[in-house]
Image (cartoon, rainbow, N blue to C red; front, side, top):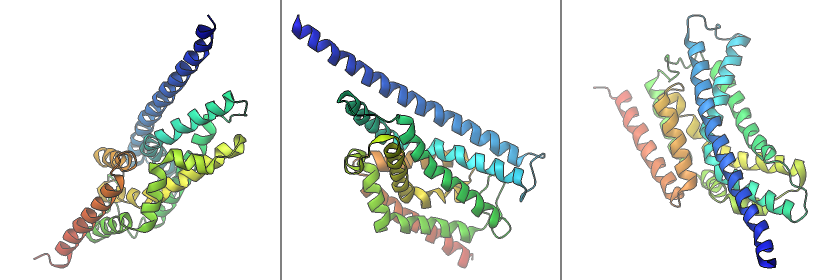
Length: 262
């Protein structure tokens, strides 16, 4: 009888943990789907005949919403392991009597980094609007600039900074063990810190959206899947370097056609 009574709480705790994982994963799927919907809904508004004129506040707001929802849709799925591990560690701490901060604070810290990146992308896009014209799908019209984006992304893939940030993203359990902070402020700081490593890992790759088209669904999904693969599969470092070499070769091939079109 006592053994059955002792086993019951463990069973309930396991079910609670499983339910939490399901809720978190379902929430990430919903946020990703809503993010993609909002991205293209806002993009349609930007490209419609009734779109606000570039340079106006209304145009900047719509552009920010598009970038923000797109970044959350692309980056939150690859952060799922860190989010789930934080939830598990926090839940374990609460069972041991420690105060546990809500999982939402960790996610908010992570999302805040990509919110800042979205604002920076909008500022850059608006500031270079006349110098670097874009197509209707928001891809650069200059072949040489497109080649430069590919080469820059490839070089960054091979850089020590990229590899250092990628290692942190690939080992969220180790990251949380080394950087654990108590309380609400600690949860937010950990989310911000993990988001910074993720930004360091992926920010140049996001520049490739201007090559394939910021509003091109296949390009967005392809980049999101690559980012997730790079972080989640064991051979992510090898994949990162291989893609870096491929991007450099691709960019040089395109650039060679620009300098010697004949």
